[in-house]
Image (tube, helix red, strand yellow):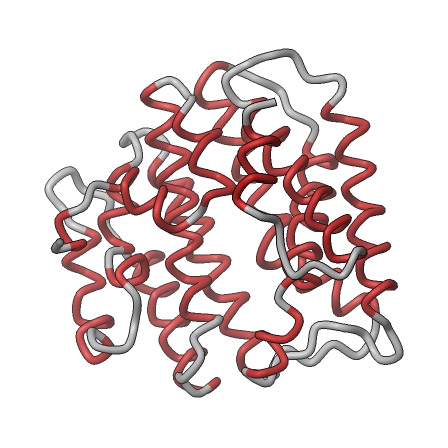
Length: 271
């Protein structure tokens, strides 16, 4: 199969079992906007996490992406995919499909909300470039908080904007930050060995696995309190399903399991 021909939702399904289901349940325009945002962020995340690119290369590439998104004209006949193509050309054999197709993901969003998604992608790419430059040096908890805000909590704020654009929903932005932090800390706990293998250590000095899990659980508990107040609405699944998966992941890690089984995931998403 030529994956380059796959549509955004097919790529989303292949990329994230956590987010595909809640996004796939959304009404069409909300689905397009949310899928666009997720894939744009995943595109630059794969660059940040790339196992073989040097930190200098990652930082330079992410800054180029950020500046290109900021410089885009947003005229109706302009193509962000074409604008990004010269940046990606030297890395066609190194980067995954989800990164190389960043321009397509940005263009997938409805036109009215696309500039917001592209602007947040530009900001996050610049923040990721900073962390690559400093080799993800975490000196204390404040650095960890800054990192989790940079790459995850800020996404929660974008999702609040998308929800408001779609149907006027007023989501709590403080809870969105808590949610992003909790999810990212869960990812850090789950991916500990992979991160160390590529030279990134997100644990503050002296922290243990149990410390990191407890800190993640703290932010997830705050999110869970807010989630209980949410009505059954198109966007609520985007919060409730990933939250349940993150909570279950922390429990699995505490029990010595590396990750959830497919059966675990299906039980949670079908609950």
